[in-house]
Image (cartoon, rainbow, N blue to C red; front, side, top):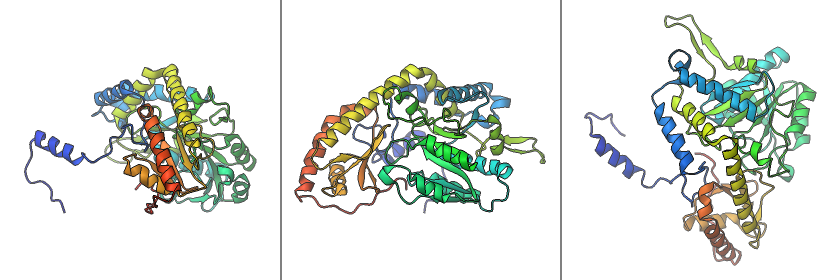
Amino acid sequence: MTNFPSQKRDWSELKSAMNEARSNDLIWNHERVFKPAYFAGDDVLEVARESYHMYINENALYSKTSYPSLYQYETELIDMLVDLLNGPDGSGGSFTSGGTESNLLAMKTAREWAKEHQPGSSTPEIVVPRTAHPSFEKGATVLEMKVVRLQESPNLTVDLAAMEKAINANTIMLVGSAPPYNYGHTDPITVIGAMAQQHGLWMHVDSCLGGFILPFAREFDSTIPEFDFLVPTVRSISVDLHKYAYAAKGISALMLRDKTHTDYNRTSFNDWPGGLYSTPNLSGSRSGGAIASAWAVINYLGREGYRNIVQDLIQLRQQFQAGINAIPGLRVVGNPQTFQFAFGSDQFDIYAVADAMEDLNWKIGRAREPHSIQLMINRSHHLTVTTFLSDLEKVSDRVAAGNIKVRDIQSVYAN
């Protein structure tokens, strides 16, 4: 047990202790780390950090009354996202702390919308693909809703027949991912949206990972389907700005085809001594730094900058894919369209390969369905792609020969 400190300590001493404490932490953008990290170059990182520090003490809760520059940034950012995601006139949105909160607010929006359009349902239900993010289960716990998660992903995609079958009188929302975390290829949003329209349901797209990749990647990859407001049945989209928009954490957005639906998530209260309290999402206090960082980085890069980064990372991903597929016994899973992808084997235990690669100080992820190694690439991996593929080939040969046995390490996404 750690007691509350009785005496103050010198900052230089504390700083030294903190540096020592973090000495065994991962370096988040190290070239041997394939865990989730969003690195577009030192110049972009400098913009993100400096702009964050400019507003590190400002609270966006008071932006309208005290920090008009933050209110300007928020307003302009929403307009930029409407433009990026092809929102029609009347679209809008609000900012959150991250993708989990954005998905939760999408569920709340659908729940309140359904009270007007589908009165009479007992426990509101949403139907999600097998690969949908676990944040929907978290949202269901908070909002007293039910998630119907499909049990299979035939051909690594949404089980559309099972989704149709799962719809009942309590269903209010269908979900598609662009892309799901597991495989990196986008769900058939147009088809799911048509199903939602046929049954009078809310259609939400979780694009927290892909929202700042797919709009640019479509120029280089014709296999990417429409996923945003170009699909007329899509009512809401979640998109993280602290992922591939490269802003400092934590900032995400819930974008809505009809901006008046943001009212479903606003809490306003005036019957107390302090005066009007009105917030657009779950948070009270919000980081002004994250908002300023997003505004600065997006303006710094612009469409041209994001397009160049996306093209560069697509080429890097293809280099990894070609090298992996050339190794006997290995295969890339599915048809990845973004920058996270998995690879496995039908001939030997891929987790044994993962164990051996980690012994060589490669930090990688593991997925269960199917058993696979998961990589999330960024621009630092230009430095190590050749070494990684060389190590992978040697390790795979040893596993195939029976010289390396699996240690039974479980796959963990977040813990």
